[in-house]
Image: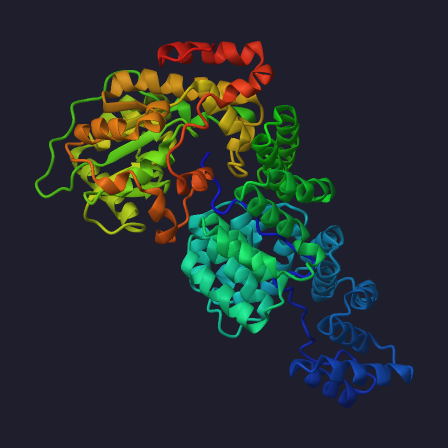
Length: 635
């Protein structure tokens, strides 16, 4: 339930460069004029579709209607971009040869070229029934499922295609796009790392640059976008996407300069361009202008994932205008679209599964810890808190200290927990017993596994601060692995936390269900914080607690107390962290990326009061025990 990488999704577009593969015939199929057909085939294989089409059309004008010529003409039409004509011929050919698998593969690809996802899927199902095999079939079937929004189903087909042709660029781009839609960004990074931009078409390079941005390779993405714009300065797709990336990196002036010279935007990019334009307007303090751009785009957008982004942005703009009712209405639309997009990707996900990992809990105190080994690095600092409690703000301050380095929301620990749970006899409902059965050798190996996972993102050296807010639900695991760790717990008024989470597009994962209403968000808050309060007693972590409100009002005092807890002296640069956010050029992996580029302020303190009328009695009842426990009030 973490924040999405780039927030803005990759779209499956009508003119997608994730190309289908039409299969030219390997040999003539009972032609009336073998030599003529062979000539046309050779032209098509040489890439001269127009000459092949002229040749096929001339023969057909003489009355040749043999299926081999029909198929070749359809292939030539498809290669020439005449998708509708090609589809009609492929359909006629498939009806004449219903047992020929390639006939249905080519028809399915033609349907995809015509943006007919349903027709494509039906054709690929017929191809499968006819015994289709090979990458053109696997790739096309995966693309057809993607066109239907069935990204989870598509993934298996695209993985099979990549396993058969690991170096095929078109397969890797399609697989990468599917991984981006499923927000599997680590897997995406591995998928696109092997793609060489040299030799790719302009459209393919545009998609590759966007996938690189999603995968966390911002520098490579910017360089490729710059190359594309140097080649075609008037192209809107790379310009809009680069502007969105730069805005995400808090380089707002550069992003605005790019958008200022955007020419005509094609239909496929209209929503993304509207979103980019609106974000710039909001960030320069003109939310009203942003609303004028967003409202029509949100109303007409048919894709639920993209529509959700537009409505979330619209809600943020209404909030900036102090229009609470309009903001809540926009959020209702945003979350409704997000739920639909989530169902496309994870149709089997149930509400009960969203917080299912909370069942992994201690019932007794942890066993005695294993003694430290000479030469081991110091145990990490774990920075935790309910989402939107100020962890990103504190992370930026800590990251400026020369003795510390921060791992920003990378699931290194989750990889280790996955390995732990594969141990023989493991039982989630007996976490303390399962941990007690792991011996000292396994303890050492799992600690080393964690360090290896961290090293994928950070070089070893300074003491590690692992910032992952919901690790506060992993107290038992962490204290068993790292009994000498330090914990930093951020608290914020529960009502402000809940409101802020409800406003955020956390991605198309469990957060789309956990935060889809104020009341469901309050239930999530109560479940997570209740789990923490119970587990911290049994796990016994060493915790320093600070409140967001104190950090915002008096950052110097709050930071001094925190650094004393870590036995470190505060550094002057920790207070001016916002000045270095843009200079570092690294994407902040949470929705707070814009706020941390500003000096510390208290504008968000008590924000929930503007929305108090929308907090139902049931919502407030869920939060009241935590409001009291953490020293806040509902007044």
